[in-house]
Length: 230
Image (cartoon, rainbow, N blue to C red; front, side, top):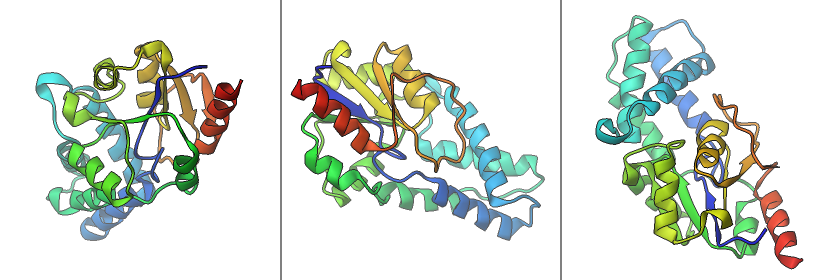
C-alpha cells in the first residue's frame, strides 16, 4: 500500500474524544434545571438530535458546529419540558475543542510517522487551528466542515481534502474513530479507510465497514511502516 498521504480525523482520533466535555455540560444542565435524567442519558439524547441535524445542515442551510450544538441542546431540553439559554453551556465545548488532550500514543506516533497528514474534521476551523498550535502539531493540510459548509460523511468534505492536498484518491487512507462520519464518508468517497476503535465514544450511529481496524494510531504506524518497508 503506497500512499501520497493520510487523511486523519481530529477529535476522538488524534485527540481525546468529547465525552467528558459533553457529559460535564449535561451535568450542569441537569443541576440547573432539575430534569430527571442522567448525564449519560442526556448526552445520548442530545447527540442523536445533533447528528440528525448535522445531516440536514449541509450547503445553503449550513450551521457551524457551535451553532448546531446550541440549537440541538435547546431543542432537546424543550422536549424534556425545560427552557434554557444553550449558549451558557456550549461555551464549555469550545474550551475543549481549543485545548483537547492528545490521545496517549499520539506524541510517539507523530515522532515516528513519516507520511504527510491532512486533518479532515467536523469542526469549526479556528478551534482546530488553535488546538494544533497549542500542541505544536504541523500538518500538510487542514479541511474542516466550516471550510466546505458540509459535514462528514458528505463526500464534498473528502473531495475538498483531495483538492487541498493534490493527493490521488487511490493513494489516500482516511483514518478516524466514527463509523458514521469517517468510515461511511470515506467509503462513499471511494477512499480506503481505517477505523480507530476506541472505547470512549459516547454513541456511534454508524454501520460502515472499514478496510482496517486499529486499537490506536500506533497500529496505523505499524501497518504503514511495514508496507513501505517491503
